[in-house]
Length: 182
Length: 182
DNA sequence: GTGGTCATGTAAGTGGTTACATGATTTG
DNA sequence: CAAATCATGTAACCACTTACATGACCAC
Image 1 (cartoon, rainbow over the protein chains, first blue to last red):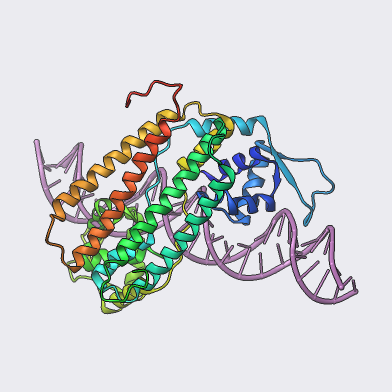
Image 2: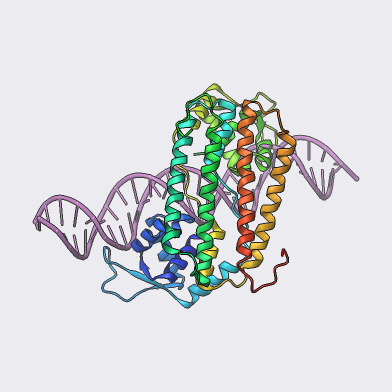
């Protein structure tokens, strides 16, 4: 039950249409809660029906017409309630760890290449986060809201840092192959 | 498509019945790929039908009768294929990060208590991993298989370490409330 | 006015969760 | 033999994914 609240948060930050939301998810909220445009359109419909958001007045709300939404007071209240409510962390699901565990049984043949590829992907993500930090959080001027957003970004940076280090460590365990990263 | 391969891995490590698998998931593979007994029974049925595993000969395979499975050569081959195949990392989904982002908009009221609770949960998980490491990976005798399994456990330990540190850091951002952890 | 892109949407399928049902075995 | 627990399973539901459909707008 997190997607509707992710959407409420995004809409409170800025009223948007479905596609605008999709794009913003791709480069912001989606970093820790991804969603496709189909999920978003479906959820926007439910949220409107539940009276938590409403479509901003526009022309004819037909297919192909842009339709922007804003959050109603009931939506803000629901988001505040959800934010404060106790929730258990979801159990983690990581395919690469599973594959290494499998490799301990059926052999490591062929997995090094993908470990290297994942390392590159995580390095790219880390660089992206660092760029966002440099752009949006210059030292010395964090307000109250910014402090929280910076904290979230920091989690992303530290997680990607962890993965890159762990993957390098993992690759070092395959000494039988030449390691270009040295 | 990871659950069947998680099951194949577990069955290769040791042929088991559905409930035995469920228990082993709860304290081993489930640390990075959780599954309920319903998922496991359903998947065992599919894997058997696909000819990747087979039920070990027993009495009457009826309801309430224990039924153990073992992996067939085709199952081992499929697991090796899957392990070596390139796979993109799944986008991450973390509710707590989402909630902090929401809190930046609707206020932090009430979230500190759950941050503390999560900190305790992650500390407990970390302690459990450390205990497993102490028990199963005493220094100085890692074989090839063990090295991989140790590497996976290390990821768990380092991830929980990250979360506990991050949560402590987050809690330090709520100076308006007394912090018992000091 | 055709082709490409923007924008919203439908439909089908998959994987995971929750609730419940039922037979077998053990314990008092 | 009644109650508790072990073990397997069914059914309904929900969230997410993938593929596709369709209308509006813009550039040439």
